View 1 (cartoon, each protein chain N blue to C red):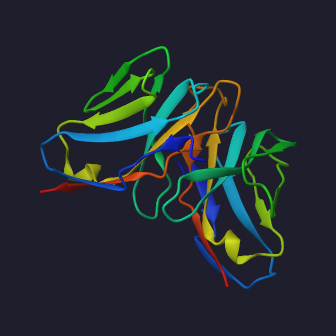
View 2 (view 1 turned 180 degrees about the horizontal axis):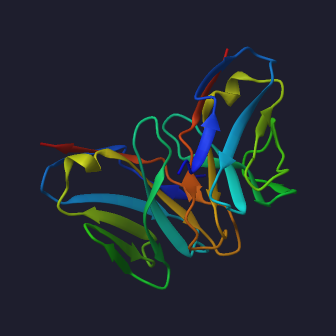
Length: 112
Length: 114
């Protein structure tokens, strides 16, 4: 069973517009959520995170929103730039466990 | 400033062969991890280590072994390779292992077992 789900395998967005990537989870014990970005032939790199005690975290063009009642989080990128084209992974952990549980990823394509 | 390095980048194995995937980090991190990523799937944790001499199983440890004799190195051993082990393998490290801890990843090793 997938505890972390990213239901959109790919997303295409015009340069300059907003990109919204979604992630759903099933385990109510998760208390920390992270987004990683991955370019081809490279390892994932950390992008932004949010604790379950918050509902929003912002870092420059990137904002993550958490809706605990819906067990849903989203990553907003605005404005979208060509260099944002990559695969974005949502991951979650609970405080008692070292293990990160990963979604399958969403491939974001920014069109010029 | 190398970060996390992995060798080899690519490898093709025959069924039943063995090999070791190498991972080295130069950030003096205590925590190290091995993941595998199958096509269209998220990363799954194979083994992790919280310091030299200490290792533990993750979600998918069967068919693999690890050791951690130094802070820097965390090799992953595949014994009796099987087609189901065809995957991309990522090594990662982090400084403290807590909830807010950021993991730094190597570039990956693409392994094919035929």
